[in-house]
Image (cartoon, rainbow, N blue to C red; front, side, top):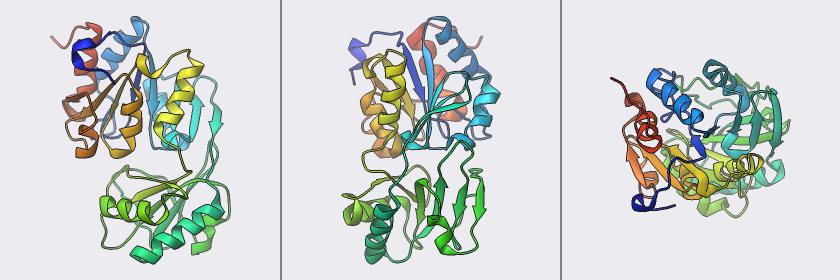
Length: 278
């Protein structure tokens, strides 16, 4: 990261999270943000979406934007070429290690409620009995008939909930019990994600940037949750949204207005010398 006093805008790469960042509360990208992204593109910048969502859960947003670039999905586990409708990279979770990790976490906190995010461009999220999807986030969940069904096919990550524990407490306990086996991150309320060790949005974004001939120093990145921390630390300039988790604000170079105020656009207009709304 750099300090605000030595910025070298415009940046060649703009990386944006989706939920709580690029998308407003109604799930849309505002007109001011669309205009700012178009203005930055006219000045030579590339835009890469970097989201915890799988490709299957992201494509409709990309289609609505008319997006034809690369997208980093699944917490860095998938890199998707939107123009070619092709997956360029995919990282799956070792299910043997994941079972061991779940056992060790459960020994500390009690039973976990799991949902498996399966591999592939059309990968489904298969929820074991008891898992409670948040109806507000639109996660495309298929309910399993029995608990073992979540382990039956290749999976990119697991969503895990534990009764009586919030996401921060569960993440801390999970890292203590099994952080040497798997990656643990938080991307939303009430649950953690169990990932391949070492995987993050930063690893996926680094892969995408190299394909574009760019580096972290060329990048301005926007996010709102702890899973965005590696991405903001990798980027030349990291921006947290006004409603971001305190842990992300602590590593950000700047705190932008909230996603409903189109904070991404506000920052891009300044960095790229774009005209804002009249």
